[in-house]
Length: 187
Image (cartoon, rainbow, N blue to C red; front, side, top):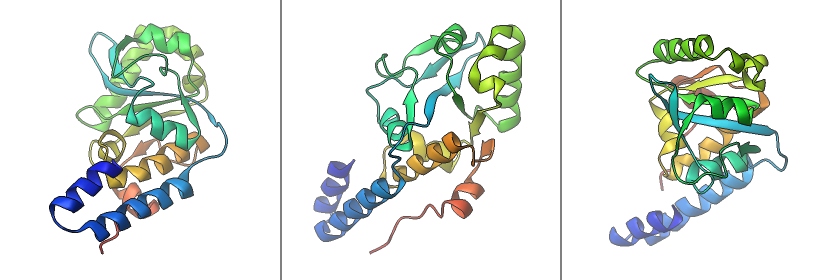
C-alpha cells in the first residue's frame, strides 16, 4: 500500500505529500496495533444460499489487519480467498465471526439465522455461544477492511473494537465516522 501511495505521489509530482500520507499511515498502525492476542476471528466475505462462504486466507491484506488488531485468523492456513463450508466454522470454533453485509443488514441477519437453523452444531461455536457475531455495513466499514487504501489503517481499530466487544453488532458508516473519526489528513 505504501508503494502505491508513493507511486501515485510520484505520478502527480507530489512526493512530499505522499511521504506524509505514508508517515501518517504508519503512525496510525502503531497507534491502533494491539500488543496482545485477543482471540480468534473468522471473516465471512459472502455467505451463499448453500451455506458455503468466501473468507480470507492467511496470506491476505485482511489477515494482516486482523493480526494488528489482536485477532488470529482461523483460516490462516488457507491461501487467498477460499470457498469454505459452514462445517469449517464449526471445526475451527472462532471466538468472533464477522460477516460482510449482503444486500442489507436484515437480510444478512436472516441468512445467519437460517444458517443456525440448518446447522444446529453452530450453537456450540464460541462466537455464537457468546453472541460475538458482527456485521460490517457495505459502505465505508467493508471498504476500509476489504480495499487496501490509506483509510484501511482504521480497519485495525474496527477489528480491535470487535475483539474487545466494544463495537456495535452492526458496524455502519455513521459509527465509523463518529466513533473512529475515520478521516484522511489533507496536506
